[in-house]
Length: 202
Ligand SMILES: Nc1nc2c(ncn2[C@@H]2O[C@H](COP(=O)(O)OP(=O)(O)OP(=O)(O)O)[C@@H](O)[C@H]2O)c(=O)[nH]1
Ligand SMILES: [Mg+2]
Image (cartoon, rainbow, N blue to C red; front, side, top):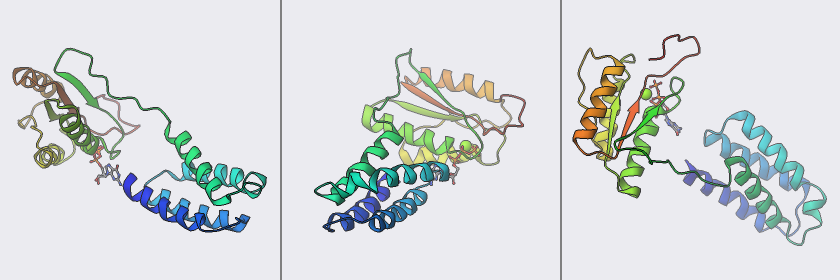
């Protein structure tokens, strides 16, 4: 997602950089393209609107018009704003606990828990040399467990064997035991999606 976003933004800024003096219309045109690039990269609409409004306000007018290199100025403003929006400092995942460290994926239905579990697993395995296992506690959505199994096969991360009819809490216990026995550093537990009307926690 970020690769294609930065490619698109790069293209937009290249056009800007080639211009000598930047007019309000140029900034607005560029912002229209930035808006499309952000929306295509799945950035939420209210966030995109705020972002574009903020950048346009800062870019159009004196700040840009009086600068020596207006195009560069817009690039800087967009860059500063993006950094502000995304947060400038990164927080790694703390694994300071007794292994196997459980990571529970919780969230609304369809918000990307299962996909993110696999992304985190792949990252921990490849970048941090951790022994990682994944287990699906999602007994509700059809094929949810198979989905995690297939992702595990794609990234070369083992998943807890599926046993039909087991409750989420029991699967979690089985996952912890299996991970401990197999000397795993991390066990990712993927839960079923939640809706605001759901009463039971699992
Ligand atoms: N564009 C985009 N799509 C994503 C991303 N992460 C997940 N998806 C897609 O969103 C859909 C739901 O992703 P899942 O990972 O299955 O979401 P989930 O939270 O596990 O869903 P439930 O288990 O049904 O609650 C799938 O079609 C994914 O391919 C992402 O970062 N960007
Ligand atoms: Mg899921």
